[in-house]
Image 1 (cartoon, helix red, strand yellow):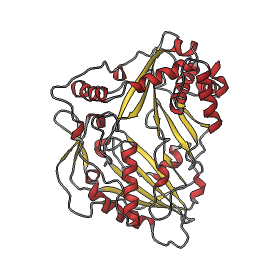
Image 2 (tube, helix red, strand yellow; image 1 turned 135 degrees about the vertical axis):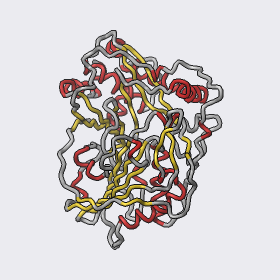
Image 3 (cartoon, helix red, strand yellow; image 1 turned 30 degrees about the vertical axis):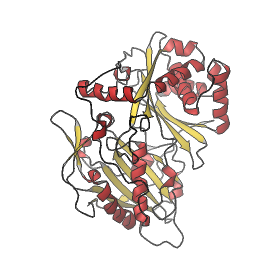
Image 4 (tube, helix red, strand yellow; image 1 turned 90 degrees about the vertical axis):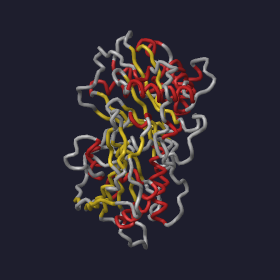
Length: 436
């Protein structure tokens, strides 16, 4: 397990003029409902997919991907609309058919020069995702922006900027893989379910839980990083590291079993608290998303296009995390997961309906896991990507779990901290340090 800094930018990109890609057929023109689970995470998520040249295939990838986009937008037509705000102050989508922003680009570099993108780097990878000039907020940015960059070796990169209010990771991968299926001329394996009204708030709303995930915590400690520049590091945990970590948890407690996610989640949370020197009485919150698709009653339909994830939380004082063994933090993570059932999720939806509250991130670590998303299955006709993943972290408080390379047996943990804390954090992120 090691930590690595992100390398500097290695190439420059020349952009062509952007165009609007509209659905291949007329689509409905109406205001599209977004559920309360879509409201709280309206951030632009940027991802890239790296493809090598395919011997004997002379097609221009930009042409193929653009034409497939026209066709798949017939199924996913809200993506060709524009985000708006309802009279109640909630996000919605105006299905105008204006289209998706599409840009082609070229570079003299080879696609292999990009390196290992499991260590996201906004300076390098940011050149591969188009940013709408002058857009100051999400209302001025279309829900989906596409850039196809051709490299001198014949390889190319598909760069996407997609608003999280349109879909979570699972739904986003359904869309990208459907798009690729259209490009290959095969039927959609997972047709989208566009109806988000199945997650409407109840009338009247019924709040059954306190929903501490939305609560604000005072952060008087020097660990408050809001106004500091951050150093980003990636920590790779191989299969042996992950097994040792789980053994360390089980050997130090009454916990009889734990998953890799639970052990790693508790480990990163505790390590961050130890490294940042929080005062013992300081409260600290952990937030992470749980896929609620199968937990709703009835379960969400296959292909549900929106956000089916629900935030859950663990809360502790810094002192108890520092003084108690790692197994204590892991047990708090397990308790947070056990909260999530239909009753809790419906209550969270109704809580937002009443309060319009957004989760506070003060004294909070947000862990998001992409380690199970099907990034490596997308095939537009050039085979599956040899690398794929995010460009950067969406928020300063976020730690991201990524599968490492195509084998997906290792997990990369990426996060940022002020440089003055990073050395200590690197120490505590050694598996052997979990007993400190």
